[in-house]
Image (cartoon, rainbow, N blue to C red; front, side):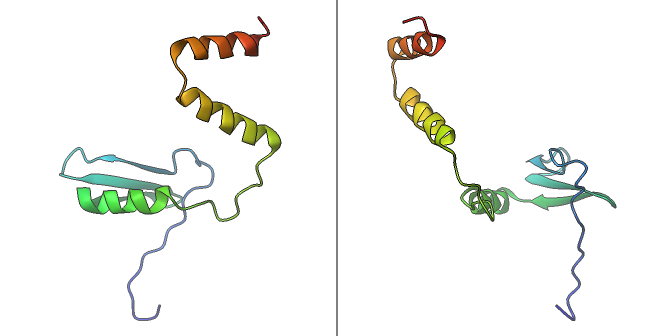
Length: 102
């Protein structure tokens, strides 16, 4: 990377839930990606197209070393999939069954 002017900062590990945020810009068009670093906040402004490209790029990117799902994880995923396609009565019946009311 010699000859390139690249600023590097590390996201503050003490603030993992707020270390990276994004949202609409309040004082400009587009969006702001905010990184909370040990050296203070760093804001990156993106127009709508750039923000969409970033969002679609990272949305489908898996965690570098995803944990192996447990049987419970798989069952919960399946339950959510089934609930997503269920009608109101099916959902009520499932809730009663999970509560042991059958």
